[in-house]
Amino acid sequence: MSVMPLILAATVVVSLFSLSGIFALSLNEKHLHRVLFVIIGFSAGSILGAVFFDLLPEAIELVESDVVFVYVALGFVLFFFLERFIYWYHGHGHREDIEHLPARPGKAGTREFAYLNLIGDGIHNFIDGIVIAVSFLVDPAVGAAATVAVIFHELPQEMGDYGILLYGGFSRRSALVLNFAVALTVVFGGATALFVSNWIEELSGLLIALAAGGFTYLGASELIPELHEEKTLGRSVVQFIAFLLGLSLIWSLGIIFPE
Image 1 (cartoon, rainbow, N blue to C red):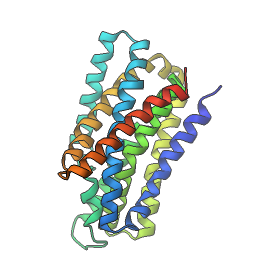
Image 2 (cartoon, rainbow, N blue to C red):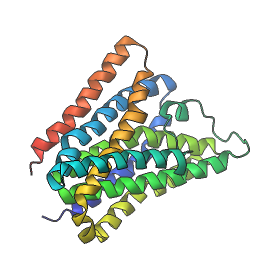
Image 3 (cartoon, rainbow, N blue to C red):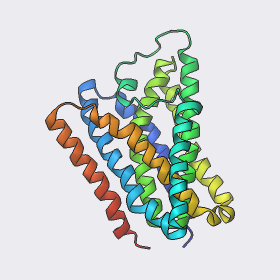
Image 4 (spheres, helix red, strand yellow):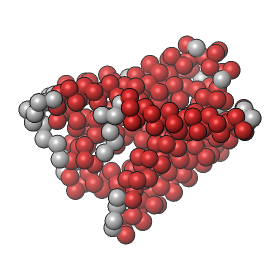
């Protein structure tokens, strides 16, 4: 069966999560905290689950293990470089981005900041689209795991991006349209990977290893540190359970979608 419809569906679904900003701003700060602290825990579990249950095992099956871990390290370094030097304005302070930003503050440079955030988001989403497409080309189970990991990583991020656009002085409608337009670069990334699929399939094991390294970076540098910010024992337990549920979901996808 062709995986093209699966890749198209997965990337479109990921793009639609850019509309989550409407949901975020419909909640007051207290309710938003309740939603985000669970989502971030689940996101950390799902993205690391995708690495250890799907991406790494598949890469090791396709490429010699000593080469795989070199590319995992390269993927980690690549994502660190992108985050630190290419789209450094595209931060992931999920809670800070959307809870305390007034709309149209009128400060100099805020609109430029918002545009830089859009550029960073576009680069990030394009890479996500390539990762999703390559994962489906290797195995539908790996593709499903990668898609779930991307969705739950994107959800709090897209809420934050929408808030940043409002902070930059855009109207709610303009912010929504711009955020969705940039989110469509996920589809463009997937389509690009499909267009060069014959070449990509020869390098799929290496690309999967790179993605594993990148996902490890995202989980370890962005999501896990945010979990450590929670100081309340009860909420920390809930986050840990959400983390385990994220891991369990990715593990179960390997059973639901066997090779």
